[in-house]
Length: 114
Length: 116
Image (cartoon, rainbow over all chains, first blue to last red):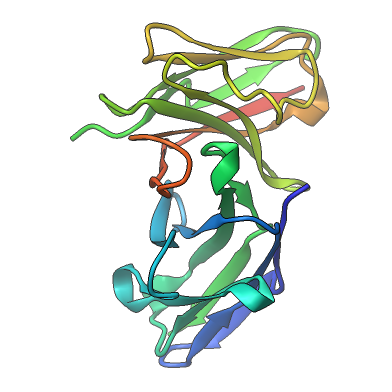
């Protein structure tokens, strides 16, 4: 069965620090990869996605992620975080041959200190 | 435009009662998904509908859970004989399509279910 692992459950950073959140998945076939974010009191919303082409994808609010197929990884990065980035971040995988369902990681709670 | 809407926003029920949760997807979206978000289990896939195809029910945790989608639009998730472990936030999402093209799923605000 597919699974998604996020290595960090809670990350605390100061403003302007750099961010990298790890995500690894287990599935041998073609995948679509997503990072979703849930700001306090808000819906889940898409940060960025990869489904083909350039493995370095850029999303909203200065976030980017790199798909490394050989490592089954899709880590999220941001060079300089802001207090407003405080949220929970979810990595998700969709196996292209298995319809649209998403398998989510456990989530990483990011707290940014002003 | 309007996003995905869900009702009720909160539901408190007694153990053993049945509950129905409703989802209105974004107009024109052919795919509709139900997920469950709970403290111990994170975000879990439950079921998804794509057009007129048979739904993928592979994530439903037991036969007490069922869902239907009428007229390719509104969906209802039904939980029979609720148990305390069913307490969670139930999320609905919709997308323009599904499968290989990596369509974005748009999520609703969720229904928080508490079973006492």
